[in-house]
Image (cartoon, rainbow, N blue to C red; front, side, top):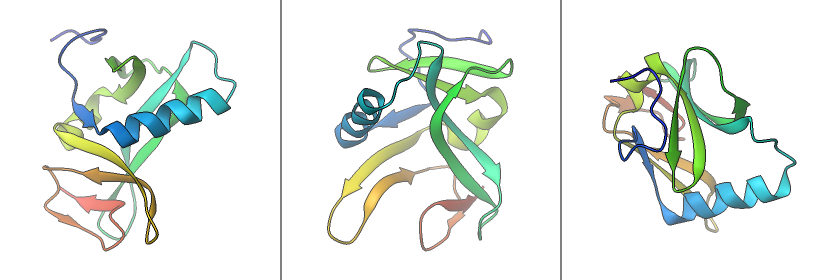
Amino acid sequence: MEAEVKNSSFTPITRTENALKEVRNIISQKELTEEFGLRVGVTGGGCSGMTYVLGFDKKQDSDQEFMIDGVKVYMNKSHGLYLLGMEVDFQDGLNARGFTFSNPNATSTCGCGTSFSA
């Protein structure tokens, strides 16, 4: 596989319609230039070992680039091991509001759902 996959049918993550709607809503409210994309990744920390990264950023040298339903997505190549097959959703209910992650690679998660171990 090439270091950069753009406009490919293969994407390491999926998203729900609610997540796509919220991401597009955020994009429309921010003044982002074309060089910005949605960064999906992991970082050390949290009560279970790793936490998810989700935000807008510029592409880094170590990133892969994907297009998911017209949204540019950046992910550090080394994070694919932890994120492959993950689904991102957005909840907007009375009990919770925000992005949620359903990760088949997680061997355990914390109660809040933002931290996991693999």
